[in-house]
Length: 371
Image 1 (cartoon, helix red, strand yellow):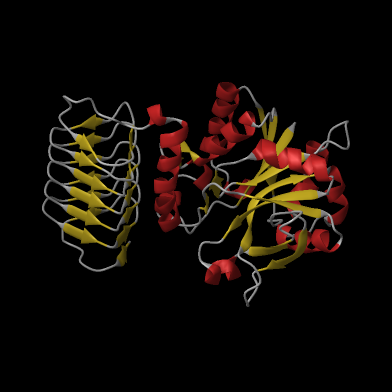
Image 2 (tube, helix red, strand yellow; image 1 turned 180 degrees about the horizontal axis):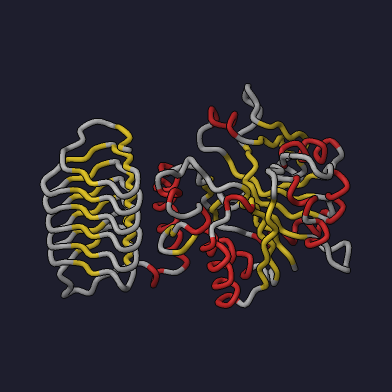
């Protein structure tokens, strides 16, 4: 079975993190977003994945990483590179010959690259086959009904699961059920997508709903659309909680004689070094080759690979990019640091977004972007 990953452009809203790596390659809970999705597809029985991406935004590291995943996961993974932006549905039409197979009625899965969830893909596929619609869309309930204007909204017959209406970014309340960005399509969908022009998925879905060709499945696990650093950090807690139930060995539980302490859900890479007297958690991720000095306190934060936090520093509600250094006795609160940011000792840095390769010698006491 085949699947498509819609990468499109690499999120600029995740800057300054995406100034060093494209969004799909950023480590989320010590595994790249791309690998999270590829593993979910493999678990669903997918053997071949096509990644649709803009060629002009594609760094050399992307191809190398895809080859690495291909070898490790035992899947065939290809890339179709767009010369111009074709939206979220247009790339499917452009890659039709690569997606379809000799069995012309075989459905295929489509996943947006900025979506992270529990991925009930087998159930979604079975439901699609059972109801024989052109599309089955995964949906989720929006936790804040006022925010539905940012999404595609489904009006669903809750008895049958049929989508009666689909409205893109409604200005008034229609429903709290939103498009989760995961689909199963039948190949007949290609007849509905115009060739060579930019087409959004949210243009196709209303047409399908009106033709009684759109079914839905409500997701009961967690779901997040990672569009910025805030949504990235907000997703860590639910993901670690899920990990506690599904793969508890992936979380860090120091032995009774350990010199440091964890509170709540914490994930520390095996190559990281944790000093005596450190207190980590809850909702903390420490990446590969990180070094924490004595007495460091981390809470609701993610450290990407190679970060060094010197003794007695505090980091809270923050995302620190690769190879950052935080000086001893410094406090970093509600910040996002790009790659290789250095903070001198005994500083207070609050609410700062710091671009890569910067050095901070003075405290930052109010929210600001440091260029």
